[in-house]
Length: 185
Image (cartoon, rainbow, N blue to C red; front, side, top):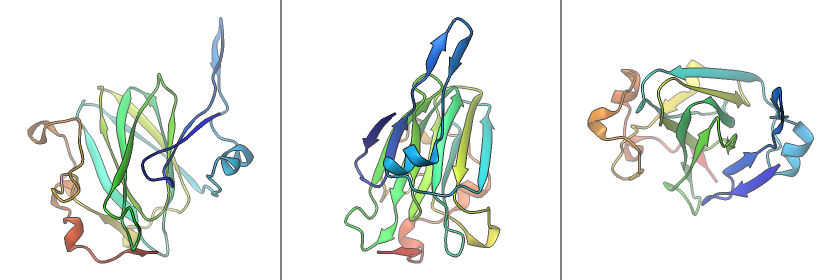
């Protein structure tokens, strides 16, 4: 498995090998021991899957706070996404900074987004499917978010603001500066 630490070292890009033959391919997409050796020592409790019909669909920026902090292992099984993690751990030297990668069915990479980070993505192709494992159950009371286009974060989204497709909920999220300190180091 290829392991790459991104601009923020806690955010890890992992690419499991695919073994192809005339039938197609086989890939071990998760192995607890191997992932722990790579720096992802997590217990996953839930798998989620989303389908985004339109190119330019933005989902995020989301997180869950205590007692239901979620780490996420994200992969794209159809299409492609620009996936981003934003450090919101107050006191961290990388607070407010981001790490991002393109995840696609073709490159087979996965992104580890630890707790204490906002997570979001933008679809680069129509009919894109994303699967992600999480380390805590969904908890509506612990759900938090920051507006995707917060100017203070200056994220280089691969879609024009006028062309982005968002949920109603994601269009009214606050800016990071208007949020409590949800995580501290």
